Length: 493
Ligand SMILES: Nc1ncnc2c1ncn2[C@@H]1O[C@H](COP(=O)(O)OP(=O)(O)OP(=O)(O)O)[C@@H](O)[C@H]1O
Ligand SMILES: [Mg+2]
Image (cartoon, rainbow, N blue to C red):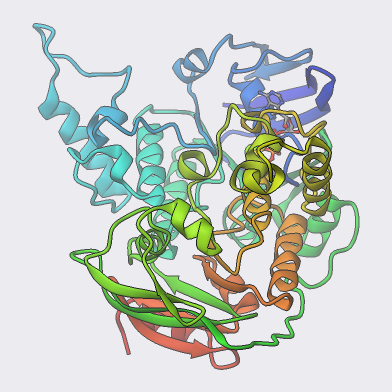
């Protein structure tokens, strides 16, 4: 299938999001789409698949002008979209999610569960996924949910598959599997639109790249004719040196310590400490228990045993409110479920954990609140028209910045960051790293869970590796390498 989008315009209210983009997708190619957060990538694909009507421009499919009125129609015509914000129904099982709206029935109209199970199983095998089909989807990790979405898309027999940040929550092994699947799809003549902020991936699997900036196409080129630096420059409109800012850690006393944290079947005997001003990176494979440990520390899940010490005293954290009160902030990996209230404005979300500090006598000081929010928006370069915009209308990466802003605002002593730069563009990543450096220079202790090895290596003063719920090793900065981390993360010595 050959798709051509010509001179597309789309505005939301006064916000001109697409301002004359062109996009050309050849049959059987893997086409990268890159651009800063808010550049309009997801919107362009939503226009193609009929979620949003375009204001101007034309779309040609195999030479015929076409316009879909909704995503279902696009899918029936062979175009499937795996969204950046996953569309999982948490209360339904994995199997129900895979077949929602497309249930297979027997000749007498009953659900043909056996057939659906067999089909699901074959897709999971293809992706080397082993999630039980009767598991509740909401209890699956973000990575597992992503794999469910990919399997679901593969079952549609699409001619074009749009993947919006598909690997953000996947492990190295799952990514490798996905890439194998992509190359076999390509051989079958399926075209892939591959949206990602991970440059390494783009250069590994894509044939061509289109870079967007401010709702316009900057350039389309074959991958062999371009390079990292050129792409970054086209994205941000300037040169960007050094992906990680220099760290000058000035660590103080140990301010946070956990001893023997155990939750049966999830993690056991987890002990570590963090000093003031220190960044401790937590590495490990997806499902190793990293997020679960952080959730328990923050009071979201219960512990079977273990102690948490803050500033030399033992604390009991039974609920997140207690954690916040004690000065612990938590930026979660799943912004949709835990981090943000999508219907609320940017401002409302940002001041949520801090509300009390703006209302010393029960009266909210609007002016202080607005100044504070404006400062955070500027600092983190959140791309928005106004602080009153609903967070659900922001681009994926800009939502992540709001999550971070919200927790920075409470002035935490200990800040837990779980995949802090997931889906964030190169320029904004750097802003987040600089913010981390600034926080640690003020004595904040940071615990950073990250699946991106270069990020863990680039930003941590010390790295703890988790494997199957246990700490399998500790590597100080300077001794850590990708190989050493991977060895420990897979249970090797
Ligand atoms: N439904 C909507 N209503 C209002 N504004 C929207 C809506 N969807 C997107 N926007 C705005 O359109 C702009 C582009 O967003 P889009 O999601 O296309 O960016 P993106 O390039 O995919 O970014 P990211 O890398 O962060 O995912 C943003 O400024 C966003 O706020
Ligand atoms: Mg997007």
